[in-house]
Amino acid sequence: MITTKLDMRGLANLAKRMQTLAKTKTQVGFFEDSVYDDGMPVATVAAYNEFGTRFHPERPFMQETLQDKLTVKKIISVLKLAAQASIQGNGSARAIMATLGRIVAEEIKITIANYPGSNSPRTVAEKGFDRPLYDTGKMLESVKFKVVA
Image 1 (cartoon, rainbow, N blue to C red):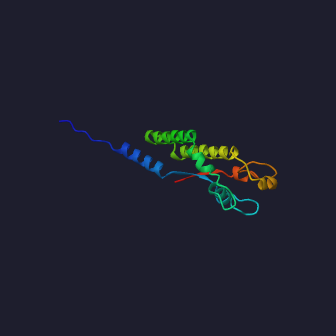
Image 2 (tube, rainbow, N blue to C red):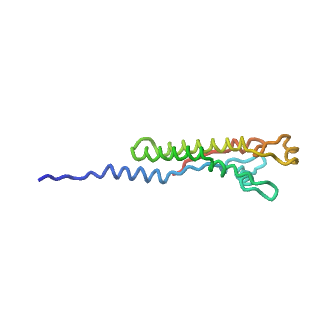
Image 3 (cartoon, rainbow, N blue to C red):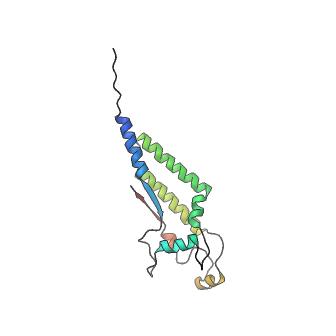
């Protein structure tokens, strides 16, 4: 007679790694510590630009970034790596999700820096140049990410 015992420790460890990955989130955007000199939160100005206001046109730079096919491919690639690393027990979910944050933040910055279109003549006169989504550079430099679990 042959008896065997199934060792479930590996499966339990895999389940734990996958749960850790599922709980690990990457947030990308404008956080509460980013404010203009006058105290206005950068997130507020970014929202005004993203969704538009009664006085400003909609310039959905975040939405456009996340709909860009190349950006989506990069995000999917990193998420695949995260899943593979968790399955294999290689690397930390937190480090992989930080990579995702860096990539998405950089893509948003690229979208802001290269945003097409022009400002109104009044805005051009106030700013002294015609560059949508750019005034002082504060919004561009404030795109950050954080990994939370």
